[in-house]
Image (tube, rainbow, N blue to C red; front, top):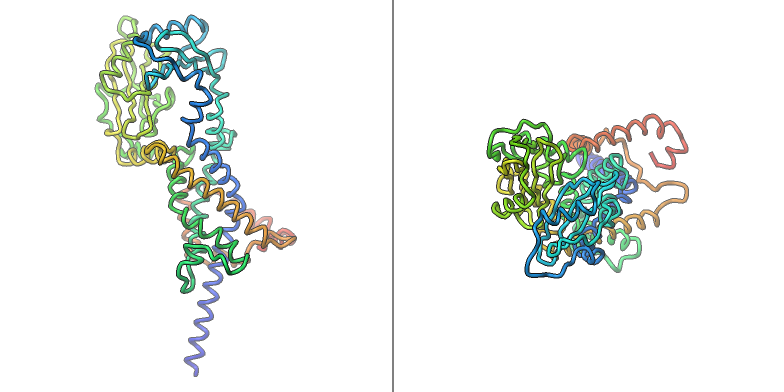
Length: 458
């Protein structure tokens, strides 16, 4: 009899512990969703639009992009001369030849503090028109997606939201995990005939489960672009040789301390590549035509951009990061001798560099063309649905004068969860910092103000 009573007590303790853990996880999932799901919603909306940047810009700027194909083209230098004639007081910063016979050439122009893109017909050399870089719609979408149009602060918020999305995924999987002998309904298919309450829960949890891999992929492939985590991750990859190897240099090591990302828009793996310097030889630079010939000779993928040096020691930098990761290239050319000082291709990338390169092109929806765009769009639409269904689920069960957060014991009593949160805080420092801020707010304000404590069910 005594043995049965002891076993019953043990079972009761296990049940209470399990319930406490469930409520704790639910509470963290709840607040992570309330705070960061709106940002996830914005990222999904802007991301789904940006996926179709090529098609959208082709429609918006068709009068600038499209040219009539003719038998002969004029040289890059002749096109440059036409741009200089039209913008005599401007600095020409870059040149991008069309990546198809029917595509115009582009010149980057800096004029009176503004950056312009000037479009030129490569067959006639005539200027077609110009666009202000800060007025291009897809660039605005990208700015919202990457930093909420708020500079560094916005970048940190987006990064924090992305990192906390991982917390949402992990805690959501725990809450979704079947606790009883459920088969498929309520686990991989929603239950349609067990009442509205059950259906609301399933319409949030089940789609979220199906989207888990896609959401995690988009978060992890987006983080390398972030300003804090991404920069530190990039530095570690570079310093460990997993980003790019030093053997890519054709000549002596560069003496410049400038990084390639400071002078050109280049693939992720090449951003920390040090820029070499040109050896001044008679102060007669090679022409833009010579640079184009070098690009042809070295088989640089079409769609590359030539960044034009504006200093005596500067170099021509060729950069291309097209639809497929394996076609990426970064090249530095001596502006006097035409010597290729560095030629950095996908094959030169370290393991991390190659993984990130593929991650970026898949994230942008370009690696596998329209199929890639469609799959990513479905994930984005799914994220929007999960966010909205989660909000609706909370709104329907929310008390009138409270947040509706589940009551839970202190996380200090949940050792496994505490270790998990500390681990995430170490891997993603902004998550760790936010956890410290939450703990301070809880200790200083929430626990000391009865109305707030009651409202948050703390």
